[in-house]
Image 1 (cartoon, rainbow, N blue to C red):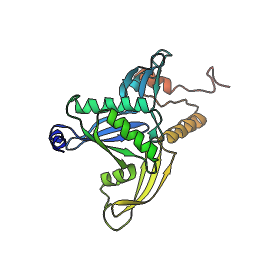
Image 2: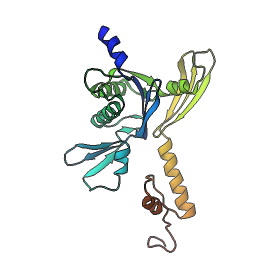
Image 3: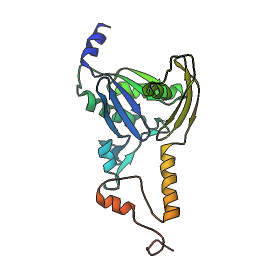
Image 4: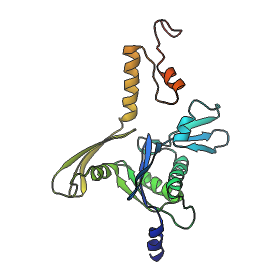
Length: 231
């Protein structure tokens, strides 16, 4: 107890939104200090992590076949425990910077309705990544608090949280979630629908990865009539 009080004075306690597509890290009094893709680049031959976040995303399509970029979370929950742990460790270290005696207290947003096994996986990954006394909060509640909704009052407030892998619709009252529905259709599916529409209607093939001018030119290359791929 005594050491916990001392440690809290020197640590940068943080909130982490561990998303399917992007992860954010918030530090009290400083705002959002990190916003990076939830992507990890690994060497398939050795299993070694080569890059995390924005750097890993930039490597997509520019590396040998043995280097792959993976998303360790699927539909808002951990799909690969070991890689999630390494990604969390990278985010915490990048913000906290102290790697030895003092560990940050961390609160992590999770989708509504995840199983106890999935909750335990998130907590274990956070602890192994260097977090002190990690806590979990359901994402609809965190979103409602962040939006300034009157979550503690005796009236219903509705929140719609559209992420990369899940969409959650919740009604909140008296400090708790009255009802919530989690749908495994969200930003990723919207991106795919937009790309499909543009290809079908405008004969343009677009992708999800931006980058330099060369990439942007490639992403807007027409297909169909007058091209090798056309009919």
